[in-house]
Image (cartoon, rainbow, N blue to C red; front, side, top):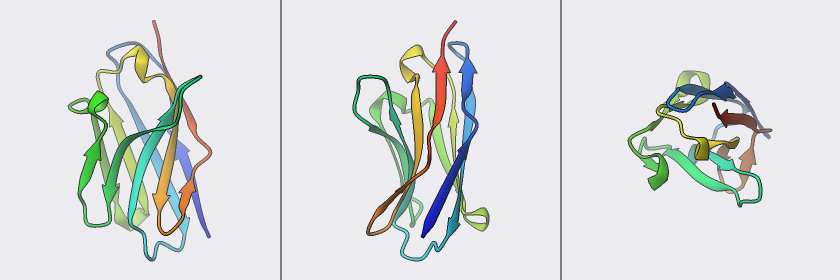
Length: 114
């Protein structure tokens, strides 16, 4: 069993920055990837960024050049540094750990507004 706990969301002005953290507990064996997804009101959940067990990263086009995903294996943690935030980045952000099954965190709200 895997549990994911996110932190770091909040309210930020357009152009500001936030750093999301996700710490996993439980067995990390057979992990394929960890990443971040988001879901805005009335929209489907979408991929934001992912880092594979081999260290490769992938980003949604909408966040390339602004967001950086990183992983700290010793802490079973993944981070999302979000810079130059825009109002359209407003969403609930979910941490994901992928094995054969997907594991999800509870979500953390990010609101970008003046």
